[in-house]
Length: 220
Image (tube, rainbow, N blue to C red):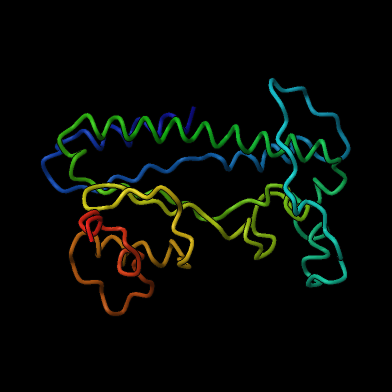
């Protein structure tokens, strides 16, 4: 309910006085609720049945050689609360975890859609840059890991960093040949798309400057 309230507030801000420049930030809770799912299903347990088929485990679910990974990662289950809670899970428990994460992701996708529909119902919708990003990834059962803040594996560090709007070329596939860091690269990218100089003292790069993301480059 709290997510939906924030979503509606964001929608209202988009609609209000759309003739003037504005910035609207919609901060969504999910899929962060996956942390509570781990706590509620701590230790050995039997998950409640779900409708449909459970997701498969990732190919890198099993750790091939615990002794060949950094010591802090080896002992994460002793120092990270959520990893401790999941340390005795079965493979089926992990599959339920992935299903829960997908459920929370679908929830937030619907809420993002509500904000976008509100925006596109106004004249401002044709001249507004949309940015979708997150602050961290999730273990998703890779290396038998859950949630976040537990290592620098790709699953934890990869986050969505999506741009859409006027002047931005539609991409059929993610841009995967450029390493970006959203919290650093957000400002340079917005400046680049808006056609204003990036403050020299600010760190980060604009993916627009290093890729063919601009719509006017489609004919080149």
